[in-house]
Amino acid sequence: MLPAIILQPKEKMDILDMTAAPGGKTTQMAALTNNKAHITACEMNKIRFERMKYNLEKQGATCVFAMNQDSRRIDDFFSFDQILLDAPCSGSGTLNLNIESINENFTEKLIEKSKVSQIELLRKAIKLLKRGKEIVYSTCSILSCENEDIVNKVLKENEVEIVPIELKNLKAEILPTKILGTVCICPDELFEGFFVAKLRKK
Image 1 (spheres, helix red, strand yellow):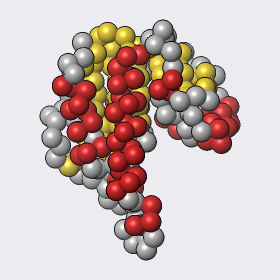
Image 2 (cartoon, helix red, strand yellow):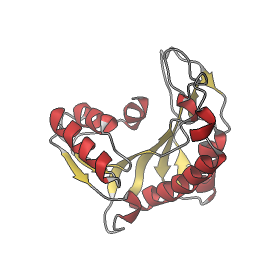
Image 3 (cartoon, one colour):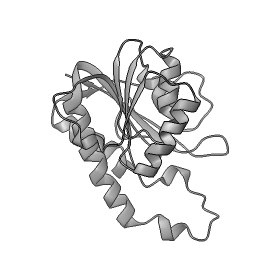
């Protein structure tokens, strides 16, 4: 749940959760803002969308407007103060290496497909973000090709800059990253592996 904490959602802000199902981080942001933010939660898959709606209602996240839509298709007319992009990924940080069928699901094709979605979603997030405001980009992958390499692509386009992440008293092993100020957590018995970067629109 660290990506939502790192975003530091604020009351009265317009917040976009771009790939929100099943809604855990969305409800977390609603709680962190005392249900006083304006959160838009997108999910393109109909079944996952219905599950998200159920979870939002069950958790009392009344400040959330749920959309059954691919967030890449949101009209550029809209703009947001804060964006959480927990991007679809290979899930390399959550793999159980003891499962025999691991190679059936964790494939090079999945990684390549994820990379395409990741860069499209992050570029869209930058378009929708107000100037001077922040995005958190996260994945449950520990592969640099889905993390630092994606972030570096948008950094080279010179619209955003890194906001260094500081994590205090976190009892997890931190893996080295190619970008100073980003965080990659090593999977262990307490943590799943994941990556987080915070970006500010110039």
